[in-house]
Image (cartoon, rainbow, N blue to C red; front, side, top):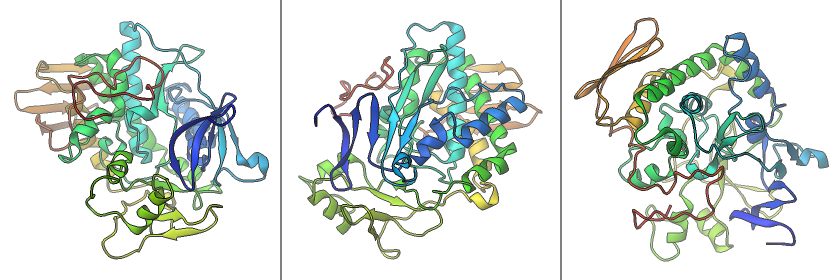
Length: 405
C-alpha cells in the first residue's frame, strides 16, 4: 500500500503495478482494448448495439459486457494507446439465488460471450479475470476487467481460456482456470440439457451475427489511431512458472530478456504490435525504448492476427463455427445426458459414442462424443473457482489438489 493506493497484481515494466485509488483502478499500461469493449461510448459498443437492434435481437443484446468509465492519459495530452490510464471500479451485486428464468438468461449470456470473445480473438479470459453479477438495472454482467490480448486468429473457444484446453501438459491448470466456471454455481453441475442447448444456439447465432457485420466491425478497428501502436500482450509463461524458476531450472530455458526482467523484480512482460513482426519488451524505465526478441532461431512463434484490411476474414472461421460448437457441447457434456433434445430450431442428439446436431435450416453435423482431445470438462470435484461473489477472492487454493490456483 502506498498512501491511499492499494497495489494489485504483479510487477511489470520497471516496477509498475495496477493499483486501486479513490474508486478508480489505475493501470500503468495502454487501456485502448478495454475501452473499445468495455466503454459504452466506444464505437465498437455502439456498433454492436446497432447491429443487434437491426437484426431483431434488441439493442441490449450485448449489455452483458461490463460498462465502465475511462479516464485515460488522454486527459493529460496522451492517447489511450500510450502507457497509463484509469478505469472506474465496477460495482455489481451478486446474482444470489437464481430462478429458472434467470438461469436461462445466464445460459444466453455464456453462449454469446463464448462467441464474441472467440470471434474477436480475445484470450486470457481465465476465471480470475472475470466478473459476474447484476447491474443497477438487474441485468446480468459477465465479462473481463482486463483485455490485453485481442485480434488473434482463433479456431476454438478453448483458446480464449473460457473453456479448458485439452493440452495434456496444462490440462489440469486449464480446467481450474477456465473462465466459464464462474457461471457453474448458478448453471449447476452438470448443467441442465436445455441450458446447454441454449448456450449452443446462442454461440452459433452470435457468430453468424458477427460474420454478417464483419466489414463494419473491421472499419471500427481500422479507424483506431492506436491500432498499430497499442501493445497486444504475449504471455510466454505463466507467473507461477516464473516463480518456480527461481528455485529450479525451467524448460525451455529462460531467454535473456526474461532473465533481465526477473533480475529487476518484474514478472516478464512481452507484447506484439499490429502489422509489425516480432515480440517486443520495454528496454528502459521511461518505456520509450523497445527491445525485440530475435526473429529467427529458437524463439517463440506467434499466431496469426486477424486481417483488419480484409474485414477480419479468416480460414479458421468455419472451424470456430462447427468444431467450436462441438467443443462447447463437449466441455459441458455429462454421462447422464442421453437421447434427442431440441431448443428452438437446434436439436442435439446424445448417443452412446456420438453427438449429432441438427442446425436451423436442416444442416446436420456429427462428431464422436469423446472430445477429450480438444477440450476438457468444466466439471471438477472441487469448487475453488466456483465462487458466488462478483469478484474472485484475491487468494484461492484448491482443496482437492496440491496445486494452488
